[in-house]
Length: 469
Image 1 (spheres, rainbow, N blue to C red):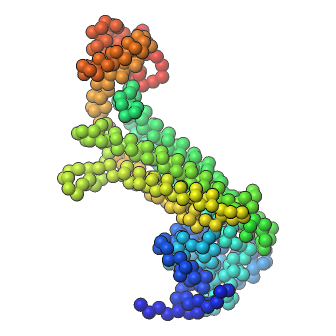
Image 2 (image 1 turned 90 degrees about the vertical axis):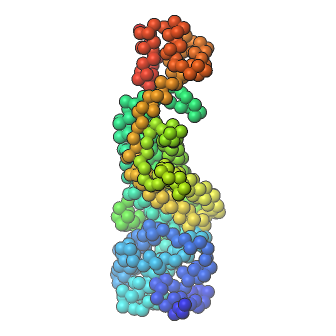
Image 3 (image 1 turned 45 degrees about the vertical axis):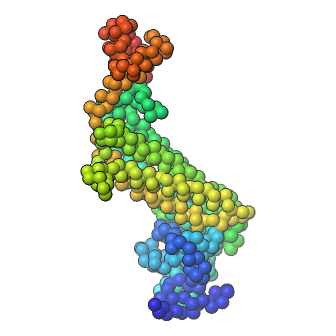
């Protein structure tokens, strides 16, 4: 395939750039240097970069450091990116130059070239609008990539992930109420345990998600700190104090999310702890989701040779060879998502501790994996809620049958006859495949009325000591 080129120059010399590209020499060098994965940073990260560049141009125009014509052209170019244009021009691989210098220059060059066009010039870098002098004014890769990570992740968490988690919690609470009357056998160590209600089991799941939402929200608060204006190492070199104060306010308006200046620019520039903290909260959420998904798989197992206390919605055929088989595919999908989030967290953790001195150079891989975790959790939880949780039904007959055969209800007798005697009754019930009730009556330990009160199964699912009278 023949490709026409134009010749661009950077500080290393001439570079052949595709003639129609909006990016320039430094982006092209990155394309040639890092043909690694074919993965690029997500669109929401590019959007966050455009917000930063627009906020900076607005601020510099206000302070008078950037003339109005150039400032307005940069703002218009950023607006076009925010509208969804030019995403095909962001071509740098995730696994790129440390800190994301190539990524920062990619957007600087695209904005500069488009701004030159808007000013009536040709699509050639460094004429009326320069990528470094104007688009990157008072900025560094070391603050803008850091800030873009915070903006993209927090936007995705607040506007997308939290709402779908709240919907999952709500649907689990609905099942909690719907199944509250259904008595069943509890299980610990995958073995029979004391009675409980199916609604209580689902209430536990709802609480896990509620706690997960709280953890993610609390951790995400750290993302509100932005080191914009810290420049290369946190000193704020080439960034006016007025710019540092105002640009965060502009970013908050453009992103519709509240941000604040970093408490300490040096800590914020050299550390990715906020991203590590948020990833840790997402990992904890993932562990909860795995627990819930696995429980639903177990409780719906069978349907004829498993537990089968609940029925999951059949959403697709389960086997290419076994006709009629239906699998818990939505729970399986959610497990895969959660496993990936845990893997992403391992990458983020290692990258977070890999910074040295005044900078963490692993920011691109942290940004990609953090955003990836938020995005797949959002999509996975949404689908799981809609296609699985909302349609769960209870098999009351199976729940009742298992509970009636469960000798562990003898636990309610322990306060009255002692642990050892209760264990003797339980063993006899297991061995002879009889109910505890029939054995106790046979032994004459309680009257029928007393036993009825003590072994009131509904009362056994609430706090307290079952009494004879």
